[in-house]
View (tube, rainbow, N blue to C red):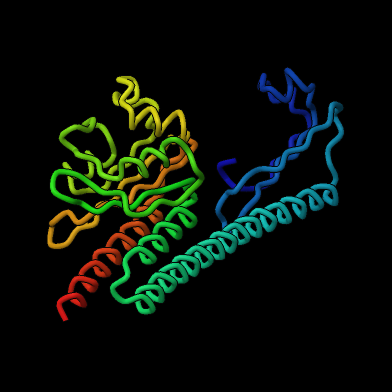
Length: 270
């Protein structure tokens, strides 16, 4: 509909065009009405008769009204979707601010006490990022020590309780912690069950996949002046990558954790 105007054909077959309305539907008299928004073509409303009987002006006007109503409905749906998205964004932002506030309250109410701070951070990170479980680690020497856990019990959870320290020299290089230590950057594994470490039947990988049911994994380093202080690792039990906003949230928690650790260190010096 190049001219964006109503097209009314008394006998479509007489036009000599073997189009689908003619060959499949037996269309003869037709009306095509453009759906316009600010002179922009949004769509077309077409109706057909199988006999040669032109549509009246009133009938064409009625179709034009329906076309206008369709454009309004489309615009209303667009505006409603935008409103829903804004509401969702505001809710997400409020939830993140509330979580940050909770962590700050714990820090201020327990000066020098890191365990409740780590637990609160991890709990909020897992919940808001729609993960299933998570761990918070501190970097010690050649490895990491698990200092906080969040989520249901599993063999993977028990393994960390029995062996809270992981020596990276003895660990599979494909582990999320190993990759965080190597890169000092964000590590996201779309599906840990497809990793070499699981195919190699590494103990940590097997426990992670078969016992805890982990699939998508996110690892975020805790850094102070490019020095690796620790890491936050959260897990989903389905293949669903974490969004940029969720990654930024965990990065904020990691930064808070580093500040809390430094505050605790300074308090011990007083």
